[in-house]
Amino acid sequence: MRRFTISLLLAIPLVAIAQVYKSVDENGNTVYSDKPPTNGSSSEKVQVGAPNTSPPPRQVDRPTATVKQKKIEVSVDITSPENDTAIAIGFAGNFSVTATVNPPLGNGNSAQLLIDGTAIGPAQAHTSWALSNIYRGSHILTVVISNYAGEKLAESPPITVHVLRAKAGN
Image (cartoon, rainbow, N blue to C red; front, top):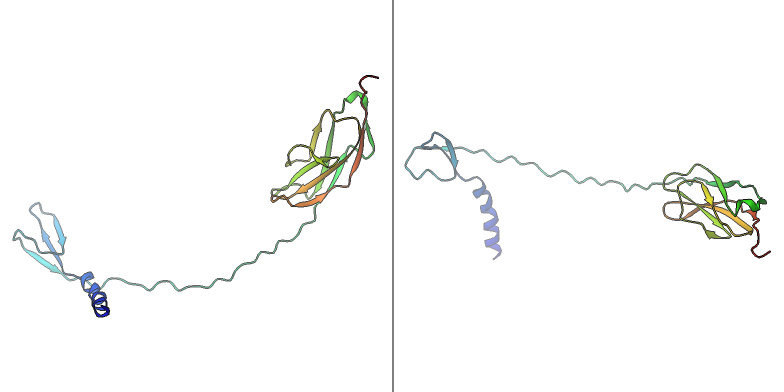
């Protein structure tokens, strides 16, 4: 069986360089074939040179690149309202919160406002929030900056706001 396989492998190049015949058909078209024409027309044998070959490209070992990402310090501060601000009764618990982030948000980073430790809405790509109908009482506000993977990069120092609202029934 092994000799048969070797013989078969050695015969493959002979098939690849088989004889080629060139003839002209009745319409005047030049025809190339591996068999002489059967209609008795004249043909000539074409000498085919060795096929073009080239070795495969050599394997290049490429070093594995390790990318060191420089850790960037991120800071965030709530700039409005100021700490210990009283939100007056006439505002019905409506006020805005603004934070400053350094460096500015980008690269998939997001900001999340927390009131008393509870997230207000989804994380967002900007640093201002319009709040409405916040219950009366004192509330602690913080802003958390996270990267695209949800990892916390920075948290603002907490500030306290005091929402003053009329009490129903008094």
